Image (cartoon, rainbow, N blue to C red):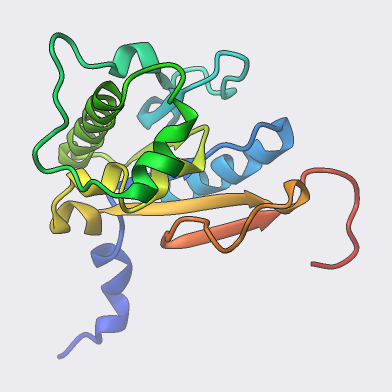
Length: 188
């Protein structure tokens, strides 16, 4: 008896790591909880990359990484396999331009990509949460991953329509969730 492929596709396409962002509003945390339930990810398997200390996620057992944790140790050169572009330098790196030199930023990107690789090699499903969507651009963290690793990574971007985002330059991801975080809106 032949089993149709329809019955096996959920197991084949289940990602190992879900990468999402956190909007700086408490009510936006529901998107993360929804992803956790949808992919059955426990709090212990959530990693939160905290850029700004003013906001944390309300998960007791989540692992928290900070910029300080991800900074490279010792002398740092721009990684050899890094894809350099004007967009990467002028747009993605610009948030850190006044804090750290470009080579240190690229080393930090590489360290975060190594963290994602370690989550991909884990036998359990994991989620990594970022505070800023700039980590989702192909020229950022994904430039350090191999093609098969990219396939095991599921990117879900949450976009707050109330902050008037520039929808022309949002990153390419596998799923986008749009929401309003202020006031009541009758239609989308």
